[in-house]
Image (cartoon, rainbow, N blue to C red; front, top):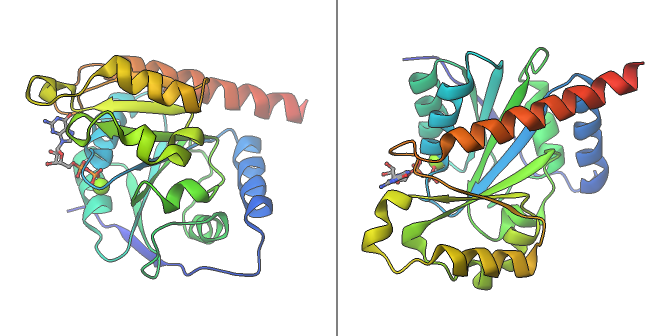
Length: 230
Ligand SMILES: Nc1nc2c(ncn2[C@@H]2O[C@H](COP(=O)(O)OP(=O)(O)O)[C@@H](O)[C@H]2O)c(=O)[nH]1
Ligand SMILES: [Mg+2]
């Protein structure tokens, strides 16, 4: 079993979130590390998707991963054991979100130098995580087929702040009344710039397209880093 570092961070009321988030983005951009924040309801497939993506990308990219949870270290352990990369568990004092200052304090404990990609698996919740900028370059939300295509109507902010929507568990499509076009229309009405990838983390369907998107975003951050040092 790989050893996973566990760090406890509690909320600070002193640091404005926007400032802390901007500082994280500035620092990670300067060192050429793409930071992705992955959000969804519990059970929609965050950990399974991340394991599958990391295993596809780990030969090409140096990848780090952090998992936020109220209690357990199961997810960070799962990622470390199934991918072999360095994963860290953040315990956040029972809150339903992680903010930028908490992320910054976690990052003090996690050496990100040399990483091309840093991924945060956020708390499983469609409300609180959407309200806090973590300092990530891109927000990803996962909508899984069994949850239903009405989730954008019920949790609009999550879809407004997400750059990418992964529609997961498409292998289960025959068993649920989930209409992909309806889901897309509902998200695009809230966020016309959202990018969609229908995937199955279980069968691997659609994951190559997500990997291609990640590689493009890593290249964009590195180009940005290079233009700032010229
Ligand atoms: N059928 C199917 N099950 C999936 C898929 N992705 C995840 N699961 C299952 O959904 C459950 C929750 O997945 P998990 O990754 O722990 O979700 P998380 O709570 O969002 O991190 C597990 O039983 C997974 O095996 C998928 O693409 N298809
Ligand atoms: Mg998980």
